[in-house]
Picture 1 (cartoon, rainbow, N blue to C red):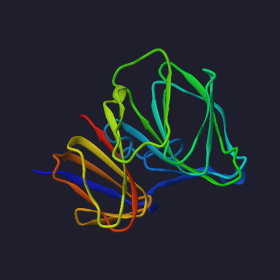
Picture 2: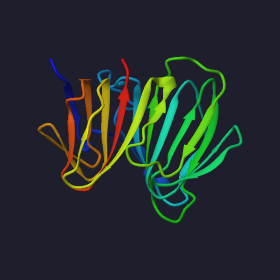
Picture 3: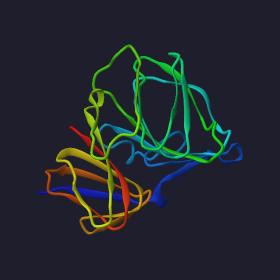
Picture 4: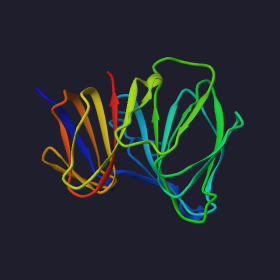
Length: 222
């Protein structure tokens, strides 16, 4: 039958946050007060949230459990502190991974002087674990896969030059999010903030950069 692709535009995302506190949020899936029974998840992915924090703004300490959380900074610097004692600053090109397991609390803030934009993606684990784990890879190289085995998922980051092509991984579920630039996927043009949900990809789906572009691609098993 071939791959089935469902394109979701940036303008279709749910809006949230607290603009008065310097927080703006865009949600790709049902999240918080924004509930759509037909848009709860795709594969293991249950959230792909774009957060915009003004300098000095942030999220005070709050809990997570039984969630695999991957964060990608688009611009600015994200300061992370959690209940295990870890503190880190995440910048563009870095991948941050927090496996909440049975429970962890953390703080996320923009302690820098410039606006902060980051994507935070939540995945459901396939196997419950008790101890939280944390990892940061600084300056992740292009085309270097980042595996999240507890969710049966792998993140691929592609930075493409205009005209460059890349094959979408063959997997039961593939989620493509355009961070910046413009790409073509089949007959669809995808721009910054657009996403595509692909089912049944068999290595015959291709992305082509129309302009210079940065794209996140989640490869997820059934």
